[in-house]
Length: 172
Length: 157
Image (cartoon, rainbow over all chains, first blue to last red; front, side):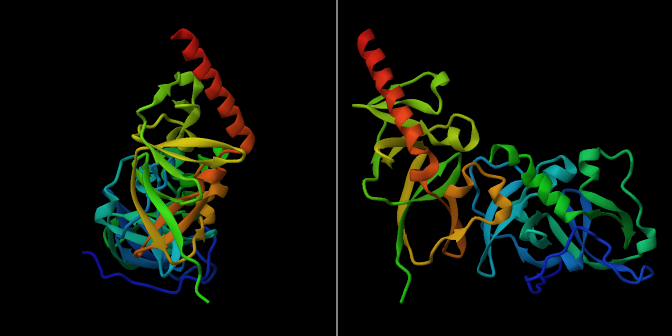
């Protein structure tokens, strides 16, 4: 089920640690969302909001993972499509939602197919990325955990952002 | 005091709608008079008569030859260049000033210093400063290439 859009203040940025300091016994709250057929989670501290899909201005010459620019609360933000990087498949982002992540360089929109819920995961149950996973994709997640009956990959937001725009660094 | 309005031309490049500022001397030209060049000459696509270099904007932005039906001619340094675009769409007046391109995207585009973002009707338009994409020295070199092409084709005729 898709929940209504949620929102929070877009000011702060966090590093890529999905497990913020604190009581290691406590659970970690994750926003769960789908990319293709796979489920991913982002710690709520790294989520600035969830919005219905909106017009994104494409930029010529960028990689498929860079969708372009969108206006969010009066601010121009980059919009990325994580699906090709994480699943190896193309996406139909226009049908879904924008998860606004707090990346170190500022807010960034992530095109996702569906948003499920905010759920609490047991930190102790988080497994490292599977060794069988393609290393280029494995570095984009911190681990896997089962939440409410789903296997969820924990997204490494800063690494994802670097991967989406990084391969074009040399030509800039 | 309100901010000055900005007039921009909307056009399409590589399937994307972008805006470019309407500057003094900007002209939209058809390609009927095009003398085409070879692929080895890219980003030069040819010469519009009498001797206006036609530069492939898609090639500059993405490294792949583009398709187009319209050239945007404008002054670059001490010379003039025409940039090939797929088509022109509209001229619009914007009240809001452009915003910088988000820092994250500067690494994702070519010519990051030439891009800005224009809020427009609840969305955003990428704004490309065409006059700054190529340095004046490069523009003059393209002008020399164009003159050589015209001379070579003329001598063959």
